[in-house]
Each structure stands twice: as C-alpha cells, then as structure tokens.
Image 1 (cartoon, rainbow, N blue to C red):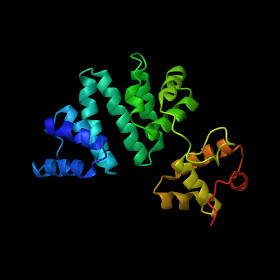
Image 2: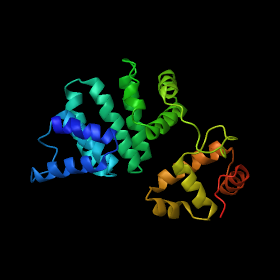
Image 3: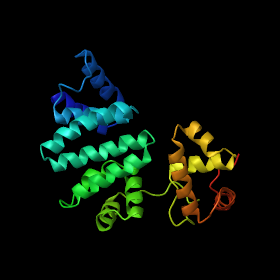
Length: 230
C-alpha cells in the first residue's frame, strides 16, 4: 500500500519513470495479471498509472473489476471516482458514447453528495465530457456547478474567440482532415476512431460552427483562422 501511495504521488509530480518502475515491479511479482491480489486503492492507482502511460485497455479491465466490488460494498464516493476514471479510459479508447454514459452515471451517483473535486482533478478530458453531458441535459445544475469549479486557464490562442463554444483538440483534428477531403471512414482509420464516433465529432463541429455541411464547415473554419498556415 505504501508503494501504491508513492506511485500516486510520483504520478502527480509527473515522475513517469517512478510510476513505470512500480508497474514493472507489480508485473514481476506475479505470473498472473498484477491486479488480482491488490487492494482497492492499489488497483485504482494502477489504473491511473496505466492511463498516464497510454494503456487504457488494461486500465478499463482493472476499473471494471474494482468497480463491481466497490458498488457491491455500497462505497458510493469511491465508485464515483472509479466511474470517472472509466470514462477517461473509454474516451482514450475512442468509445465516446460509452464514455458519456459512464460520466452520466457518475454524475447521478455524485449529485446527492455534492461531489466536486473527484471530477475536476481529472482535468480537461473530463471537462469536455461534462460539457457534452450538459448538452444532453444530464443533472444540469450539478454539471454547471462542476464546470464552474474547473480552473480557468488562459486560452492557448484567440483564433476561436468568435465561436459560441471552442472546438476540442479532437474536433480540430477531424476538421483538418475534412478540409483535406478525407471521407468519414478514412478519418476513422487515420485517427483510430469508430465511424459512429467520427460522425459524432462531425455533428459537434457543424453545431459549433453554425453550419450544415462539410463545405460550409471548412469555409467557416478558414474565416476563423482555425487552420495553421503553411
């Protein structure tokens, strides 16, 4: 448990080497998958580390297992944390709909206790999912309170200032490929996304730009200066 806490602190400090070493130590300590013998806090920390190391598939396996046990024990606060991490993992895997469904479940469980920190500490990706949950009308007052609690970082650039809602990094990637003439299927292959996910991003892009088709989206994006100049 002490090693898990040290790994958690190393992760918070951005010490990738220390967290990688902890995972390797776990793997070498057992011939089976390294999480079956771990306590709940250790499993959750391991999932966080795997997410940081861009290994979301293994992270989701751990989180689904520990989540079932936590739910059975009625530990709602811990369950919300695990669900938020699950949403991050699904998002990293490109499973947008599953990520949204998971974050909505976390919101419904977290709302009665007014949980805030559990959501905002997970950063920008969870913030984006919360924005989408708000668009769907999920626990609107609670979501507004959560979004208001997110640190207000200064914008990276002002090219999106004319938009009602800025495009996410993923949406900008999709938009750039749209401008290059890629089909939805080709975009999915290029970004390793399901076709339904590409269509979901495209719909969001059209909505944010206030357009109805690809040609209008590209023209509007150019007028806002969203494409980097060569």
